Amino acid sequence: MEFPITELLDYENSTEWILKHFHPKGLQCPKCKKTVKQSRKFRRTQTSELVVHRCYNCDTIYNLYTGTIFQGSQWSVKQVVLLMRGICKKGETTRELAAELGLSYKTVLVMRHKVQDNAELEQPNTPLPDSHSETDEMFQNAGEKRCTSSRS
Ligand SMILES: [Zn+2]
Image 1 (cartoon, protein in one colour):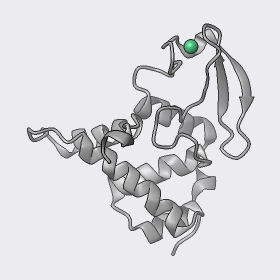
Image 2: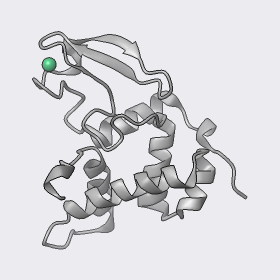
Image 3: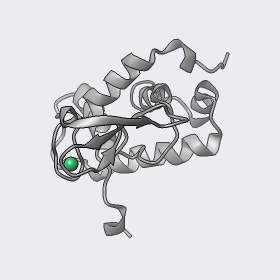
Image 4: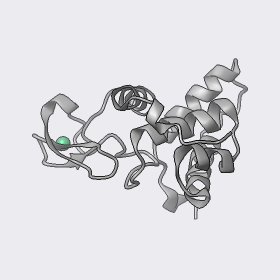
């Protein structure tokens, strides 16, 4: 049975999970690298409900997705967590994921490719000690958006 399960996840926990895996050093200003504590809450994005921070030091605005492959997307934090779980831990099909997330097949497919492309770019030449490390790397890679212009 397929059904949207985003309601089962908590906003706060999903935000914490993304922070931990996409920003292991903590959320910071993408321009001057000041910590999130050195910013003020500026507003909240409408669809994703992300807190937008404005840096006290340089006035740059940023949010939880800044610098990640989800930057500029309208995905909710719950959808991001479920996508990463579905791809990295469960190996779910794109069709299953789209149904669970309440998103279109194409939207999920495009994001899935971004996640996988980022993971492939970061593949080390030496084998990793275990599959757990590989999954952790994949999460962190999704959190560090690569410069796509250098690849074309
Ligand atoms: Zn700054």
